[in-house]
Image (cartoon, rainbow, N blue to C red):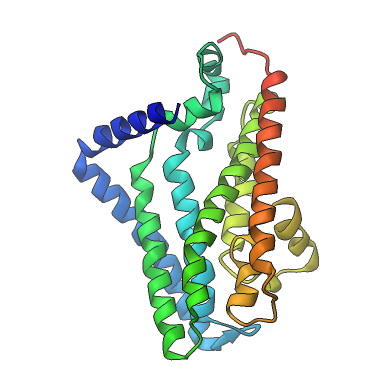
Length: 262
């Protein structure tokens, strides 16, 4: 099954690279917009120096992790993000009659290389932020080593949240509006320290939609904000647990799916 996935992945990549100009422009546009967002953030923080004890470079670490994670998810799971069309147009029925799991087939449908620009932008922000922290003597090898782990965990978390959101399409058909609340708002909020938000939002971002475990919780320890070493173990546990819930809900949704007849 995985050999089939890699074969389809290579086919997707070759297909998109046939239009290199479009790919480069799309990736550049995505990266430029994200860089502009961070520059605006930097301009604001430059006036205040610190926000609740967090410097620009420390927030840059949070921002870079989320940017990489979100862009990686949008790259490899593009059809999950656009899942409502399969319900509205009746295309999901075609996946059900094939010998492979529908979720696996969706992941092989399309890879959106245009979102790679967001990954590169996140890496640049992380590099600049780490350089700034290094000059201040606040960078540890553990922080550097944990960053790839955090990005991978973030990608899995974004996928899980999106899968849960997509699954609701089995009952509602449309999920685009819901994505604004379950995916975009939490991911944007996770660019900044969760401590900035009121208590009820902290419960959302550390419970219902636990994006805070991607970067904020590990950063409390890695950036010496009062966290404990076991925070580095709690985050993977939460992400894996949330993924299992998402996969269970997906299977539950399929069992209760009724064709639109389109």
